Amino acid sequence: MELLDPGLLLTGLSFTCFRLLNRELPRLIPAPSSALRNPWKWRNIWTSFVHSLLTGSWALLGFYLHPEMAEDLISTHSPFSHCLIAVSIGYFIHDFVDMLQNQKLHQSWELLFHHTVVITCFSISMLLHRYIGFAVVALLVEINSIFLHLRQILLMANLLKTTVYRLNSLLNLGTYVIFRISTLAWMTRWLVLNRDNIPLLIYTIGSVGMAIMTAMNIVLFYRLLRSDFLKSARDPPKERDK
Image (cartoon, rainbow, N blue to C red):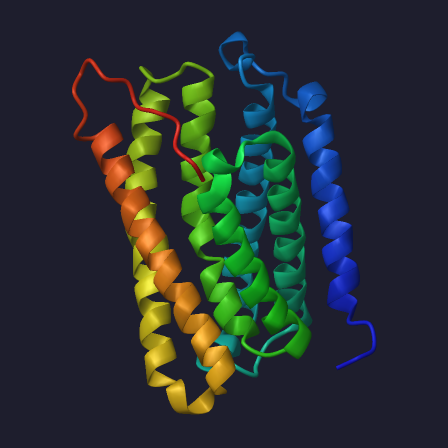
């Protein structure tokens, strides 16, 4: 490993860019009157939406351009995919700091915990230049996050009773099953099958991280299903965490 991994520089650059984007969003995308009660949330969700759109597409493109990475998720990767992991770490550090500065701990502890796990696992992968393919698989989850964040944007813009919201709800649920639940299940299976090829410490960190992510995503799936498809007609959907 080099004295200063280039990934660290890219992570710092990514963090700075997401901070600047978050700061400039009120000028780029002014909050509607319905979102003025929580302008920070409006900025935060739009920044998260940009990250999901960027990294979800990047992850798909990474496997398309370098299909050999799918055959060896441990040691085979391209600089293109290594950069993706660094950029994503920068975003998660930004979002962690943003929530600490603007939300009370009891409102954000779940996401702060989630980000801590992601930053830890991705940083190990980036610095060791190993398991990059596995981390890129994890970022396929961001394809669903595009629709998850768009749902919150539509709710904050008071666009609940629109065709766009209903269509997004269907896409959100479908991509949740395909790119979130199925991806996490596949990753868990991969860890178990490759137990002998992974050092005990890395395997333990990965297994604990996968268990936490799976539990959190099952709970979130139930909340979304209840809110958008099983709710009473009198009860409007609530804005859910990312």
